[in-house]
Length: 65
Image (cartoon, rainbow, N blue to C red):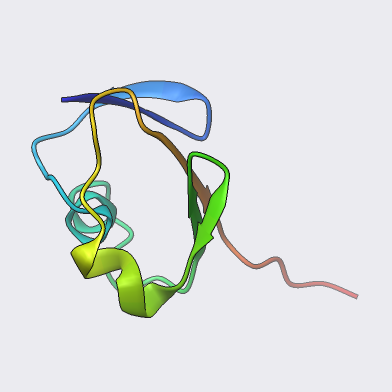
C-alpha cells in the first residue's frame, strides 16, 4: 500500500503503524508518531491499522543544548 511518511510517498507491505515502523527501520527507536494529524502513543501502534494514503509522521527526539 502507498502511504505518506513525513510527506514522502512510500510503498509498504505492513498494515499496522507498529509494523510500518519496523519495516522502515525504526523498530527499536524512540520516536513520536502521528497518523493523519493525530498523535499515536506507542502503546496503540500495534492496533492501529493504516489505510491507503495515510499520512504518517515520525519524529525522533533531538539532543543538544
